[in-house]
Length: 223
Image 1 (tube, rainbow, N blue to C red):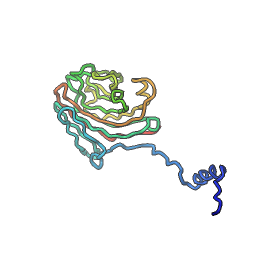
Image 2: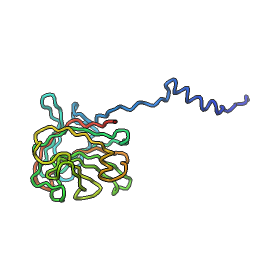
Image 3: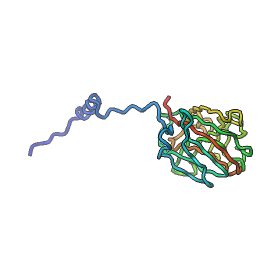
Image 4: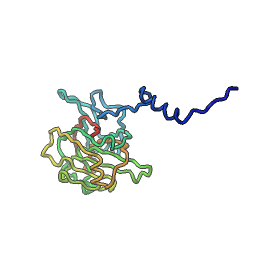
């Protein structure tokens, strides 16, 4: 039987270099942007519905050239969430557009009884220990001043950041873009773990009110 020689260390090191030069095993460039959903083909099947009390209705609508997701809530609380595991260091920015008819008159971010919002977008950071799961909750606040943040009335692991507040811009589309790393450091301290889900919700169960909102394309961006 012929003697089989073991490959030399030189060859073991050289083969990966040749593969890289020839394009085999070369890293794939990350896209600069991930479109979570632009709703042009209806609601993506990646969205899952989570009901807390009755169901907010979510339907894709079109007005002129604009396609969006409309939410209608009447004494209800349910949301849509989109599971996506990624590092904020790769995609630190999230952007979307939104619009509301009006804020909830009885809404108040500082109380459980007032913890309802015409529109909100969550960025969720899951943990194997579920009680350590954290979330940044971007809200169209009822009365919390724009630019301020506060813990949720239910848990300090969910931090509310008021991007818009009150009715001054109700009925007008607003564009938002946030740096997830900077916001996490601001509200929790330290660097964020991987994102596990993005969620949207229009809820009115605590105040017993009614709300209508619209959400435009949701995107993740590298810097």
